[in-house]
Length: 86
Image (cartoon, rainbow, N blue to C red):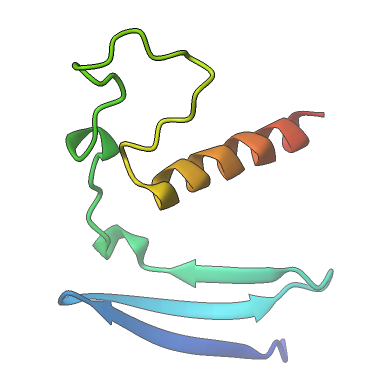
């Protein structure tokens, strides 16, 4: 078909993931990987959504107990889902 692609092997902590990157005819980048090699770790095991020492925390306050990056990822996912639904 003449489609150009790039392959990569990513290894982190002994876990290897093969990746293939290509562009579809519309110009969007597509990534294919053997993601079944990536272990799934529940976020709830590493952080608590309700702090036991602060029960009266307002609901609108962002939860930074899980870490800044996790909170930012969840906020971005929420905004992407809102944009997708309209």
